[in-house]
Amino acid sequence: MKIVTCVAPVNIAVIKYWGKSNDELIIPLNDSISASLSTDVMCAKTTIMASPLLNESAFWLNGAKQDMNSPRLARCLKKVRERADPSLPEASWNVVICSENNFPTAAGLASSAAGFACLVYALAVLYGVEGEISDVARQGSGSACRSMYGGWVRWHCQGDSIARQLKGPAHWPEMRVLILVVNDATKKHSSTLGMKRSVDTSSLIGYRAEKVVPDRIRDMEGAIFAKDFETFAELTMRDSNQFHAICLDTYPPCVYMNDTSHAIVDLVHRYNEFRGRNAACYTFDAGPNACVFLLEQEVSSFAGAVDYAFPRVGDGADYYKGLGFERVPIEGGLAETLTPAEQGKLKYMIHTEVGEGPRVLENSDDHLLTVDGLPKALGLVPA
Ligand code: PMV
Image (cartoon, rainbow, N blue to C red; front, side):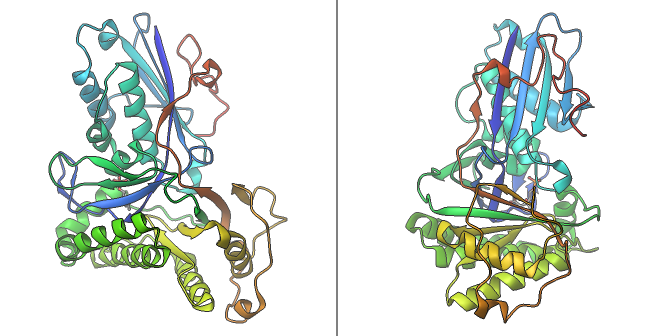
């Protein structure tokens, strides 16, 4: 019997991936750049057991049994096995896979990238496959390939379409991320369907991929290498806005941001105006939640502005998640420029930082499966 448990990070793109040039191989229309976030705050965790005693293979996700034959899962499993030494006995054993996110899936935060990165990483460890495997993670969810590395990562659309680390997490240690989780009940279109529709109907998407992104990638790499927050922030905000403009240019449109998202955009611009420089920047994925990048020295003050602009419900217990920070009230001059929203527009706030890539957890207490191959937390984890 073999068992392995790994964790993998969530990644947030600052230059977005939206649209494939090849749906089958999951080749993106343009390069993208992301930061992998600390697995200490948010991560996917996966345990895989392979044993000749298992009667059948199974896949558990957040406590619920899933279809083992889902095409994405089957593709990842097949591709890692193809690279394994065929003489290994475990290559033909059944497997039980158990995966969990340590952050609420109900928050609507992109979890599939971390999940597939974790799955592929754990499979590679299980079958002793070494070397580049971001191309396999890409088969699960395109952006999963960027979660195969820590720090700052670029996914290439050309050649083998692999992801490469630009800089490790220690390169820009002051960088912090505040995730503002927006209260929202609407069911959104999946990114796969959304981007397919954009490729089929948007007349702007080709222009973006050909004429805009190549320069942005170059400039974003430069800003990250030089730790130039001013430029980094402007590129990040412009790229998020352009991605959502393409979503609106899609027919019928894909609407991911809501009124609260737009109010966060407004807050960030007012905050920067007040500071006289880009002190914070936002980016939004295929959902209403904001990821705000800012430097450590700015966290308390910006969070104070968020607290003022988006009054929370209750006393704040469970509202502030992740890394601690000093709570300060909003600066008077800034408050004058803002009108607070109704209470409860934000669900909570997660404070995190750029972190390492996937890794193996060596302690057997970390396994999500019992020796019989059943989820330890069965019945205890909300689906
Ligand atoms: O990997 P997917 O298919 O879930 O697409 C992710 C797309 C965005 O999150 C909106 C942008 C990105 O680059 O991560």
